[in-house]
Amino acid sequence: MSDPSHLVRIADVSRELGLSPTRVRQLTDRGLIPSTRTAGGHRLFDLSAVREALARRELSRADARPPIESPTWSHRLTLLGLAEHEVWRRVADDLELDTTSPAGRIMAYAFQEMLNNAIDHSESETATISWWTDAGQWSFEIADEGVGTYTNLRTGLALDSDFEAVQELSKGKRTTDPTRHTGKGIFFTSKAVDLFRLTSAGLRWTVDNLRGDVALGSTPVTAGTTVSCRIDPQTERVLADVFRQFTEDHAFVRTRPLVKLFAIGTDFVSRSEARRLLDGLDQDFEAVDVDFAGVTDVGQGFVDELLRVWPRAHPGKTVHPLNMNPAVDFMVRRGLRRADEA
Image 1: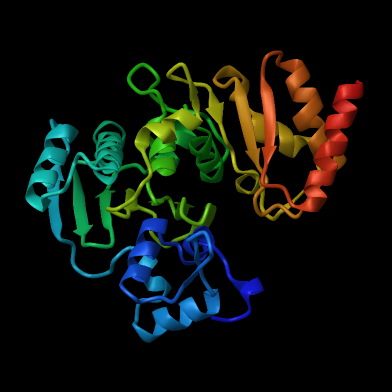
Image 2: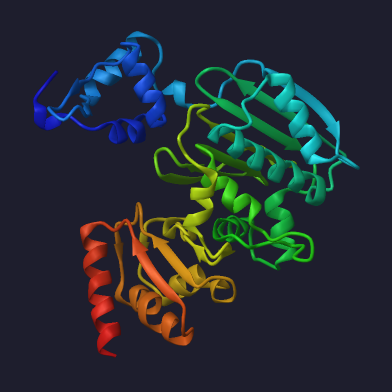
């Protein structure tokens, strides 16, 4: 191994490669990637050596991406009258999935929620459901030919653009049919699986929970909606813990919008950006965790609106900034002091 100062722990390798900690342990135990141990028995890794080892064995970062080979299970189903729990039972039986494991419980929830969305909202006659399963990952894809998730939400909520529809989905509790749906399915699914991707109307929204990252990109696919989810079958993530992050006494009261989804670029200087970020959250949530991951700097007006003006206008609501770089942290701390002095 190289200079000990360059060694990192398993969590760092997991984030860098987009593999679950369990998968990293498996590769290490099989001798496929090198590691050493501290006196206390903790694994340490040289990322350069890990990458070289993976490249030599053709495992590279492609190991973390959804498979491109033919699916293990694939069927085109008529949505009218379809019951999502019956389809899940068929999938689980045909693929012999361990439905009692953490991965099984998460995928049962994610698959049924996403299929239910297609049944109730897509206005598509059919959907193609595909599954890929192997020792390293389980993943599914549901593709319909309907109106499109972003278009449906934009129209139903009278939003100005499909881009704003992505923003609303990232908040949670946003639905065009509140009498039948809570709007929590997509939100919690995107938090529970290793990788979540929703493609519709030329936009591709990706949530990577292993790397702790979110991306929004363009795609030539404009018809219908394709949603895909992936998880390590050996994951140690527990579905109840995912719910617990955003609930109190079983009520969905906390949300975590990612700041960089709410504007093009990573500089935020205006009060209007803060107002747009917080729009609608006062009606549904007691606490708002504002994630500044990827944001380079913020302006005084943005911070003041976020930390002083909005909480004062909504008594009992709290805002908690997370994942700040030193510059953003400085501005936020300065804003908090001013809020306390006001």
